[in-house]
Each structure stands twice: as structure tokens, then as C-alpha cells.
Length: 337
Image 1 (cartoon, rainbow, N blue to C red):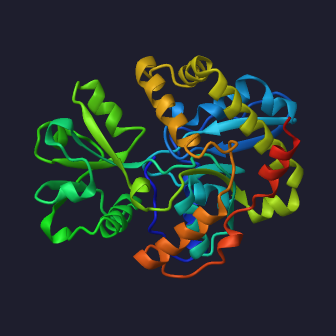
Image 2: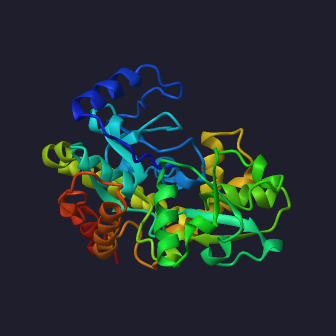
């Protein structure tokens, strides 16, 4: 689920690398053969309840009803859905909104067609016993940062908004695993609400969560995206896929146990309790604004773009209105009773 934000190479080199990667991806699944139009969607991380709406859409036959035969391909730490979709290897992808804006800044013609997470999952956790309740309480403590990722930039915006002099904070580089937090070496750990807080809970370590979005960081999270080319050449397929995906998410929200069950069918080695907690954390991000699933808040997108420019995340300005296309989701919502 980490966001990759440092694409600085020419588009041709990036897409060439993506094409070379396709044949070597360890998780590639055989195409489904149920009579529909073969369609692939690349999720940004390994199979887990974060993507349950897509599993449900397939299991309940929502994709099939749109005459689509959908294969859901896993992502991972070395897999970029943006590049694989842009190269044409996959039709659709799931990635954070910041990745879509960054890609457009690098000349990659991808377009978000739905915002799934209305709240960004970037979070900072600390032991409840340390009484760290706001970013101002980071002063005098050790804060673990994942440098070069969205987390670092969000942290700096959050601290600026909170009026904190970061020279009074001990910042240290960290990786994805948590032993240094568990041992007490790092007081505040950066991560994602779908991951680190759950891991701490499973170790019986009560934690407080501080979301960057609660401190003026205007970022949404996961989006469903595709390419300008597919929108232009096959809008019926785009509409059908998105309609089924949103139907899957709505069903999953109403039937959380079924959503977790479908996740476990896709990846049987996962633990039910962990995935149940992850799905609840996912719902918190989807339903943060009480808006219909998939809705675009253009004000947030504009503010997010400005933040990325001001913080140095973007080196080249983009036309923000071309990074997303709300027309499909608006038609879907208009047709709902």
C-alpha cells in the first residue's frame, strides 16, 4: 500500500521497463475464461481486505453482468500499477491519488475515474502510555520516517501546519517492519492505518493514531484509474468495469463478513481476524465523508495538487482537471435509486 512518488525518468523509459517487468511478475494469474471481454485490474499491494470490493464484484457476478472477464492482479513493493496500466499490460489499476498526479506530471496519461478512499490512510502511531496526542507532542521524541515516500512529505506539511519546529524532533529513517517501534527505540512510527496500528494491536500494544488528514494535509487515498486511451476508445468498457466495481464495494459495505470471506478465498493464508480489522479500517477511509462510494471532491483534489507543488513533490505543473474524470461515477450515482 505504500505510495511511489519519485518518477523522474522520461515516459518511454518507464513504459519500456514496465513491459519488461510484466513477464517476470511472480503473482501473475491466468486470465479468467468465462466468456466476457478479458480485463485486468492491478491492485497496488498484495491481496488483502483493502481491495475486498473488487473480489466481491467478481464473486457476485457483477463484472460478468457487464460482459467482462476480470482478472485481479496483485501488486507489491516492486510493482507499479501506474506503469503497468499506462503500458497497456493492465486495463485498470488501484493507486493513491498522489501517484496519479505525479504520473501526469511525468507525462504518463493515466486518469482516475473514482476515488475510493475519501480519507488518506497515512498515520503516525505512538504508545498510549506516552501521551502523544498531537504533532506538537512529537517534540523531544524519536519519529520514524519512510524517506522519499508520500509519508515524508505529508509529515512535513502536517508539522508545518501544526507550527512545529522539526529541528526539535529526532527524525530517523525506518523500513516497513516494526521491531524498532515494538522495542521502544522509535517513539512515533509512520505508516498506514490499514497496517501498522493493526500490527501493534495484535501485539497487545495500545496505540494512538494521528492522521495527517486531520492536520490539514488535503489528500485522498486509493483511486480506480485507467488511461486516456481506454476512456477514448472504449468508454463502454470503462463504464461497465466501474459500475461493477462500485456495486461490489456497496455490497461489501453492506455484507462485511462476505467481503472478508471473499478476501480469504483469494488468499487463503491470510488470517481472518486481521482481515476483519483491516476491512473495518478500510470502511473508515471509504466512508469518511459520507459521500457515495467513488465520489470526487474536486476541492480536495485541487488542494492536494497545490500541496504537492508547494512541498516539492511535483517538479512539473499539470492541468489538475485532466488527472481525473468524474463523468463515469457521476452517471453511476445518478442512476442509483
